[in-house]
Length: 392
Length: 160
Image (cartoon, rainbow over all chains, first blue to last red; front, side):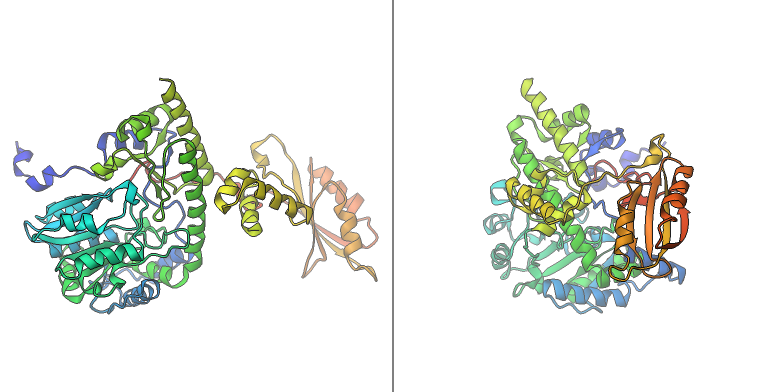
């Protein structure tokens, strides 16, 4: 008999599975759950995009593309990134099409990190940065961002985390789960800290197009002197409601992109061809579809934020992504206790804030990728739950 | 602002004034006033409910009837259209381009009732020179609302 414990990679064995296993398993198998738990849009992929994918299949465009991705798509990305964020990338050498933003994050960290290098990770944030850093032999250095700063990264926090071993900073804004965004003046302060260093910014901008209240996303790569030290990561999943197509991209300085491309070449070959053809259409013709989705998200956002505050769960205004991150500290429960009890007693699924790092404790993540009536129903049940808690 | 409110209640007439106020960013009182104003101005003409009659044991029958009409010298098709619109059996009356002049949707309890209405009421109007009746066999979508059963949410209840 093989003793698998002995033969498996100890680094991988020591990695925790993402999320809070027990809670997730219960939530995902329970019937008739009114969930506010998902991390993906409810809208169908815009029809024009689906049609473009189908058309490419009918024309039997089902071969590998070049490792970097279709040239036409890279050109469209160049145009899009310039138009939206005012950064110029060279499509032949500074753009790589990846399997979702996830692959871009993985390959970028692996291309940059040597064993022992430190990677600064602001939390609460999406769960992949720390394990990927460890897989690459790096050392995650967590910054616990604070609710009173609207979960923005401050230059003081950054400065105190930097050591001679710091190799990279993850900049995950707009942020899942907090909905925090970094505006231009916030980014300027971060850029000021980084300009005289060799620290590379890995800017995960997957929610860039989902910002509200007239605030447009600013990429740190567009600030003076920052393009050369930034890898910009984005993708199609959230903006165009294309999660299952698995398509993202990385843009950055040629020397870094060359190394990332090698990893991509050996591990992946190329991103799915059908998805690449569909993505060209997304960039070309979906401004209106995206604007309509954004308007709908914004309506839901306002209702859910007011809903939580009216229930006595303090909820700051999330300015980006599609999550509200209310505090449940007033209940005296931990995030996990709150979510488990809510799930069992009212069949409402939220995600405990500590799934996104210790600093998420005391909060829960509520996604508003659901219809307004669904959100209202969930809020009503949460209200009943809170009433029952008070009586106990 | 009015167009924002209109868009919200057009999609869901039962959305609360409080939710409209939250979404549009005005007070509930202002929402009420704006809706009242649009009602008075005849922009909002009424509120109806989309019912899937197949789900009830209610075998209402509907038909679309295309009419050819001789227009009147002064008022064109108006007089006939307005007269037809007054029948409670008539759900909608529209002036059409193309082959027919007026398109009328009629609903009745039975096939026979609708047929009788067409032959005894519509066909006998002097200005009406021809009728062509098409019965509706099944509705898949009405007033922009799908009547086919909604697709199940395929997403997991929780994901990161």
